[in-house]
Length: 168
Picture (cartoon, rainbow, N blue to C red):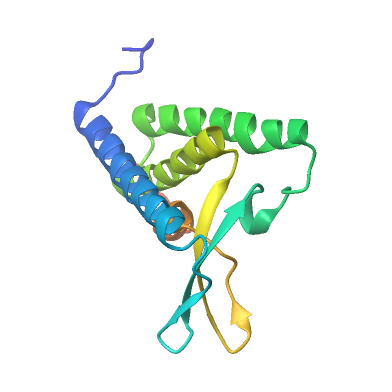
């Protein structure tokens, strides 16, 4: 118990379970990519809709900030995200205002975020290896942690536009 915040064991198990599943899947796929794709070039599937190729990303989304000075990257890609993830984790565990879909959404976001932070701490970069698109329109190169974050956002999106039920 933290002040008047009471930990709900079922909620904690749900949050930690989703986070762990996303972290494990991301770390396993990144290990596979590091072992299988580093020097193997690009692999195309489904008529070049899906590509696998290994990229080391020292920046954020789409390599933003990759060429920034080390100290700036430390604060913007490590310290700030860790603080945000800790705050989101505590909010997800203890907020009484959250719906179940929001808890699940934030758990996916937390799992992806923690896994990418783990890579930054361990390797100083994030391993990306997936790319999708067609006819010249392609995504950036991404990893499973990025997919986890996007799944969380997709779950969260419909809840943002729902009106709260009227009281009384």
